[in-house]
Length: 125
Image (cartoon, rainbow, N blue to C red; front, side, top):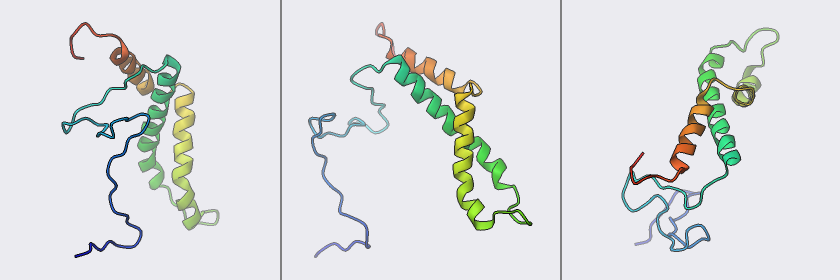
């Protein structure tokens, strides 16, 4: 019997080989919950940028509830359009705050990323 799917849902595809995943295996590892480590080390600049992007996301998520309580009615209220664009504004606030130095989340993440990239002496972090 043929399987029916709702419109817009495709059948799952089997894992295929890619340059980053030559065997086509599960990139997350065989065991559930296993943390995959990159095969090659990243540059400190790339890790700094990643940590800053993470902090920007966290700051945006922390600011979002504050902006949800602002009224959108009144003579200069934006109504539905303002509600639609507000999440993007909050995201940009988070990015600018992180770019200006943030609150220290990015620095802590960067230190941990550098620690995990350092060659270990056989101990697990």
